Length: 258
Image 1 (cartoon, one colour):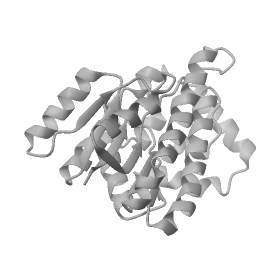
Image 2 (cartoon, rainbow, N blue to C red):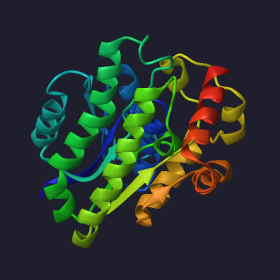
Image 3 (cartoon, rainbow, N blue to C red):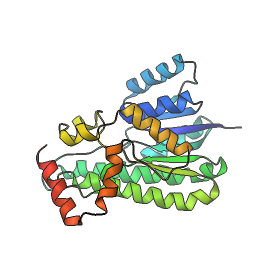
């Protein structure tokens, strides 16, 4: 019988690394995917030192054409079958879309949208067979327009919409599908995006480990949506009462101060 595994992308740091730790601590055999092989090996060694099964690692830049094929082929070569998909890999870029590098923004769409969609769809047969799960990391940005991070916010809106639709399709077949929508989290994301955390980040901040724990519990409990932190959970509620034009102007003011 093939080993049933949890596939986690973007697992070398931040929320992804914390998700790897919590899935492993709860007995899951994991396959970790990220660019930095040294980071993956360090994390795998750390997990193994706790007495849990050492994660398998796949060093792969998901921006590379055919990256999802590489991941799938390597999992097949392991003799493993994906029981749970955790799509965490993604990045953002800060600045006016018309001024940022176009190729980098398209690469963001590739990772945040195309790769997430590809990995979600290509393993659905095994998710159904194993009555497994899908955890897609979206963002509080999923609910908002995002001037000065226009493409990033748009990709996360896609992730939320796609995940909710997949939940409706796969739920009747016994698959748990959850969208994890954190607010600002102190990780390498800010440095990669090119901005410093502001007052909004300080107010809404939740640690990567707390976000991962909430995401894991939400998936196991089969929640549609997980929003770690009281402040973050208030935002969709408040948006019901604000005209879209006001929301757009407010986000623009906050982003302009970064």
